Image (cartoon, rainbow, N blue to C red; front, side, top):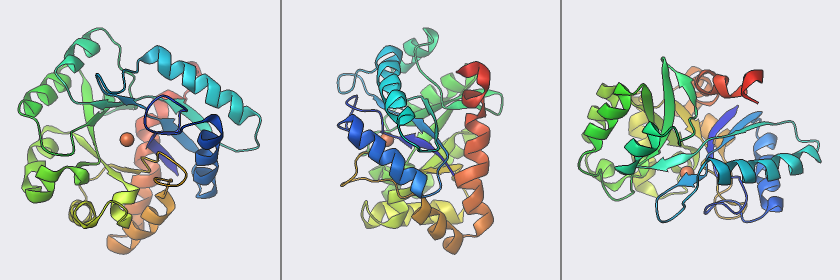
Length: 245
Ligand SMILES: [Fe+2]
């Protein structure tokens, strides 16, 4: 399986708090059958002011620690970018790391606030698409406006955005509302991938294997495979090419 959204880089956001915890999270993922991970620390202006340099530094630290283990994992780094008008500037300056390349576009993991869909979101998405950037909306099932009005996912889907399901939402760890919306979107087959969005060993560990089983039961095993293997493989393959090392 392939995990394209996880906060395993140490001391860079609200994810892993130490190298040991970072390695522990990777170990848990490997035990569930994950063989490729793309670490996606937050880039959230004023909250987590990460950039390529801070991400690369944390990535190198974790890579060095993993090299001392026997864990069989391929690791790359990108980011989870909180929606803001400044994204346009960052894109123009080529400052944002992408999850990969898919449908002839660079894929950007884009996070909405949990409370609502900010006005202008549709315009920003159209602007990104015109720049050959394909937004992947991180865990839409956790957005309270979408929980109340599931039909408001339509403009995202119609514009071509990808949707990422967080495993813990489907398992029920985030409460009944994210679980209900994730089941609704899964039955309509609107998600492109499922990812762990893991943050910590105790509070938010990776649960992608449980999500695979839940999707197999709720929809079918072909869709579970698509969301955990085939599609994340295609999206991230450009990151794992030898030339990208
Ligand atoms: Fe996240």
